[in-house]
Amino acid sequence: MSIFLNFFSKIGKPTQKLFTIGPVQMYNSTLRIKSNQLPYFRTTNFSNVIKNCDGLLKDLIGTSKSSKIMYLTSSGTGAMSATLSNFISSNDRVLIINSGSFGERFCEICRALSINFDQINVPFNHNLDIDLLNNNYSDNNYKAVLLIAHETSTGYLADILKVSEFCKKNNFLLIVDAITTFLCDKFHMDELGVDIAIISSHKGLCISPGLAMSVINEKALNKIIQNTKTDFYFDFNKYILNLRNYQTPYTPAIGIILELEDILLKIKNIGLKTWLNNVELKANIFRRTLDDRILIPKHNLSNAITPIIFKENIAKHMYTVLAEKYLYITNPSGGQFEEKMLRISHIGNIYNKDLKNLNKAISKELNKIK
Image (tube, rainbow, N blue to C red; front, side, top):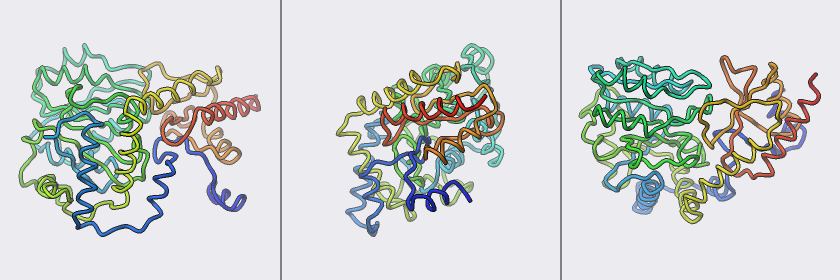
């Protein structure tokens, strides 16, 4: 019987606490919206919802009103693929800064789309070598540099500004997967010199999965491939045309867009600085109260998650015990980190006391392992 069936059989209703990076523990207002009947969407009222979201999102991500946001019914990977298919042709070459699983995903998408690419691998526990970037890759004629702002598989937080300076110097587009840094770390798109930022609904926005957005500045808009044959459904030219009426060319994720408006208004009322400070505070409290028998990586870390590394091969065991005994759901890891590392999220409707209680539970279980 699975962990989740056990929840139902033992207590009738799951009461687990999510310390996961997405979906996250949602706020009560989001849950209320999810319970309502969906409206019909080809109306002025729904256009006004998208218009409101559009202005709020541009303010929070730090881009001008002239930028365009593509509202895509997909996960973040869909937006990654759609963005490349609309901007990069098989005649172009891109540079991918590959710091983990999602950097590798950019590589996989490029292979699928027959896009030529080079990659710089950033090893675990290291930061990107900026001198290597500047000295070895400036002479190449890249259309764009692809960067994961926060590599969720390892917790690595990239130095976006340094990469942006490299792109400006060489006149390359900078396309950033900001999926797990937006609303978790400071991310002002225009100040950082990001041309295209990719975000999704179920990370820092704390709402349901299924909505992804590609935020495109005015400079990059002029470089969209016209009449692209690569992707019918995600042809950005159609989305831009429909944005004139604040609509999408096909049925959007209606319920998630309603959730989006609600959470954006919540963040506006709280204030972006306060929102970000709260995420940072939770990250600091978790790390400060972490059992000293556990390690965390040496590379730059996002406030979104803390990767915790066990000295023994007990990560899978710890995940199961935390889920079944305490109803604490954490992020397991794959590949080389499967037996050694869990990832703990600090976003969503969780509090400092929740993170302290999680650390107490981990310490308690560590004491039982000899």
